[in-house]
Image (cartoon, rainbow, N blue to C red; front, side, top):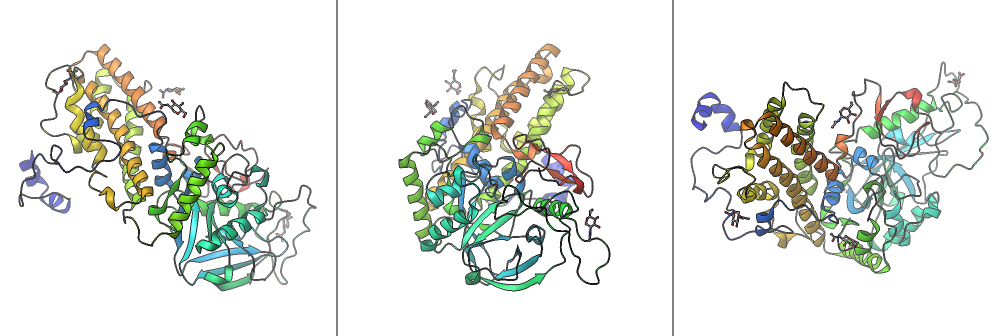
Length: 541
Ligand SMILES: *[C@@H]1O[C@H](CO)[C@@H](O)[C@H](O)[C@H]1NC(C)=O
Ligand SMILES: *[C@@H]1O[C@H](CO)[C@@H](O)[C@H](O)[C@H]1NC(C)=O
Ligand SMILES: *[C@@H]1O[C@H](CO)[C@@H](O)[C@H](O)[C@H]1NC(C)=O
Ligand SMILES: *[C@@H]1O[C@H](CO)[C@@H](O)[C@H](O)[C@H]1NC(C)=O
């Protein structure tokens, strides 16, 4: 087979990472039975019992999901209660925007947008937008989730924990108080501000003139707030309960025709947020994974308890004990004060994305092939098709000796242990744990154990599908049904937001929208079914 490929695709093989015979042969291909092994959480021995499911209290998949979704709007909208605090940098030269009612350069902490479209929402009767540029690297903390959603039930928990040591639903509209408290807290650590997300990312800057330089501060054409659809969004400060209707817009002298309508401006702010929906996300912020603090840390036992019986979209920091609170604050201090350059330079976000890229579409495809709704001639054809996709997914890890010693393959499944081990640990096994910070060790375990469960489920299918081509129709149907259950359970456990999409995809000029604060008219904030919206629908409640 190899020789044939050489003849047919010589160029392809040279350009791919494929080594022609040279160098020394490597024993057993992967050193699986060699001594020096680096594993965390999962030992080589534990793979002898590879079919054991993960602990129901395990949070590896939740930490993995956070890491793979950082700074992307879609995953953080889908699951809005963030559980991570990550040191971050906005590099020198980055341009930010700030919209306001007057032409003053703020001398108090303020909110800045990454895209003009977001800043343009602010300012009512007059509209000034200033652009500023970082004149040095800005040192920030990033709160994941929809951490700028002014909601009582969780999105602001992590920042309130930093500012006030506990969630403060009573203060969910006290944004001025919140920014002041955060900046006061951060000052001794040299923190310049905080990155959050609503329908777009934003950055709270503590001292505007310290790290930023004004590029422009412009008196822009006014917005037609009376016309399109409703009143302007003012955030912050909060809207008083009954605000008088805004006066009709006065166009600038000599202006002809319509002014930009407010609904359209809001829609475009959503559109600009959507530019950062998926990886690589908001690239103007660079994360320092070595200092990632996660409230999914299994050491925080009070939260393990608080999560019992709850859906993962509703996980919160409520119930964090005094001891665990002190523990996380101490960890945060240690992360912010230790020597720069501690830890590895492993790009954990990229490793997590490799896993998602490799499995997201294929798992979804496999589930659809195994679905009772799939259309095949008969169960045999369906099983054959699903089996071939399964082989594609496991091929990188199956050697010529990884075949069952006797049939049925399920008689003793230990023959699959090396396959599951390679599948679960190739990304991580040779990263020396000694070079990682305690925070990175958690990410390492998250990647490895998330992969372990993916690989465990695929291997459980392989046990059944290995010999399915010889099975009769009733047997094949049984195997298909069980396979569907496995992949369905796996996808529920992983809970990746990539599987939530607008279907069919939105047309040009439309925007795929998940309910996000401040909610549009008709939204149920807790129904995460996405839909395509057009500018006319960008109306607030
Ligand atoms: C503002 O909107 C109203 C309602 O659509 C419209 O009648 C008016 O002409 C608009 N004014 C400008 C200047 O765009
Ligand atoms: C999970 O955590 C809860 C709360 O701490 C505990 O009662 C339960 O025994 C744990 N389950 C397992 C399987 O360890
Ligand atoms: C099969 O299709 C029906 C109707 O469209 C749907 O309700 C059901 O959830 C589907 N079943 C599976 C397993 O996808
Ligand atoms: C399964 O096979 C492995 C390796 O051949 C062996 O060590 C183990 O004892 C077997 N397990 C059972 C339950 O027979």
